[in-house]
Length: 321
Length: 83
Image (cartoon, rainbow over all chains, first blue to last red; front, side, top):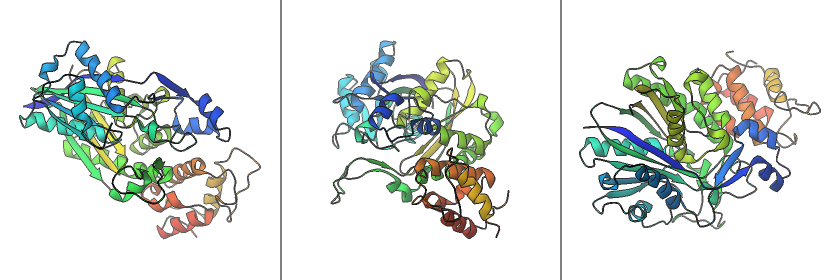
């Protein structure tokens, strides 16, 4: 049995922060320059007490309210780096909150910007192996809770949000192949220290991002992953109808586009009014591209996630509603 | 372009600044040019990669360079500098 994406929905928190607010709180920031490089005008921020589980549950409820039967779900994968607790797995809480079957497999995946592609690979594998029939894949993040209000590198970029995807059986081969990679030498360049068992004397537990280092990683590694995937699939750039990259920032996306020589008509970006929601960016963009008719039925779409870890993953999907 | 000269590196750094009052020379660095911050540095990295037709992206050490001298030295190490 093969697998395909059956449904997608997303949920964004009520609270929006625009660049004017960031400027008011940080008078020394050159906001026009920041907006030009990030391409982001607004970002969503979860309320105090509103967590990745809360956002993920709301995203999934939209799918069930639209008619998908809860009873069909037999596996839950929650991709998040802002879990409600270190333990238990937040996916278990999602199972209870959504009143899904107790026969569900449920687990968290601790990956960030590559997380949707990683989760899609796992969901697809569960289905092709016969372990599950319908997987609820949720990508949900509240990175803003880790970010200092005066952190000029991270605050203008990151946003909170969640996407929920149902991956189910398919007669055709609609998901894959995949290309994955890891380079843990970059772990220190995007990190929340003192957030796990390893602690240091500083006690610092805010998100730290070395923008230049992460940027160089993306410029070098993402085009290589795209080309490896094309080679693996026996396809060329011309065979891909649409590219959806992790919505990191305008600068990152424009440079990937430049290096891969992708025309504007074959790339879908939506970060201007949503920001970088980490693992949720790709499914949110995919849903918006489908709703806008930018992706046509049967079209070959490449999804590429990359970032914290460093970790990256790319895959091809055929969108067949 | 296969490689850059030091003068071209200086020009690349200089054009990142909108302020005509900012002067860049071989001794310029993040320590003595007030506006040379991490945002400006991203622009420098992009421009280097564009000018070097994609060869700069693989030079990871460029991310940590804090001065014209360090950029020039880093490019020289990777045979991307014309003396």
